Image (tube, rainbow, N blue to C red):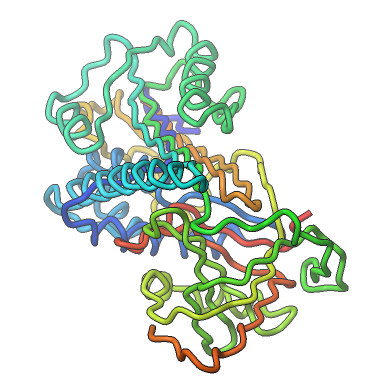
Length: 419
């Protein structure tokens, strides 16, 4: 907690995207995703949304100045000057929205021929919850409205911080179809909170080619790289993007419309997950959005569903070098672009809360995430066809849900135990 400032900022986030030049936003999202994956991967299953986290922090970054801004730019992989990063996030969100619209047309055509008729459901929302009566700069309000579509909704943290917490948590639950509940924990806000920045993302995406329930069977999976345990495993023989690389294989399963994919990075060795994670880079993830060879794959993929508790990210972000934003050392936080900084009344981030949900089954994937930042004050041969390449995902692996046109990873994680 911050002891020497009167106003706290809280940021909450859930993921989204827009279409102009989304390269800056994509690169920053994937690089921070790799940085946080290294910090958060501790032997168990993992799911988080670098896109949601970056969206929430990008709004916060818009209000940073001085050394606080310099540190945030370095940790978040943002350019320090101008509005280019904000325009890029707007472009990415627009592109994601257009992708979802296209799948509505695909679903309508499919329905006419008796095929699957579900479209990709994608909802991204940003909102700021400021303290009633606190003086925020007009330029900041205009920027977050212009690039993030984030309105201000006044709350009174001074009089009823817990009531405000419940209100924000309900907003997040509504935006994520009740998949993310209780994002901000009890005592996560208090009477010194002055601003909560929230981002929420909800995704429900059907596979381009569904798995059949008939072929789902118990198959061995080497839980945490150890002895095998039978888990429900789906099977599909189809055309998937695939590449064999040094020490691992990459397989991409397209969702409806093919502009969104579920990426699996599978180590060669049963206990090869740590070595694979050591190779992860933002560039590696970007190249996986453009696996240009399509192969007939006999894929076995375990079903899984995770709903981990909320993750407080302040320690992770400080470890990456974002110190002064959290008022370390005391008096160093500078968010003068949000509200005029006074010696005894200034804003600093108290905590960044993040929570996710993901379920992968025969129909497709349902995922949701939210982030809150709180501040104190190929041509195939016809004859004979090559045999399908067997890919058995029977050991711990890395996964990502990736927007193919940009390469941005909306969600990243690892599966060590699909049960």
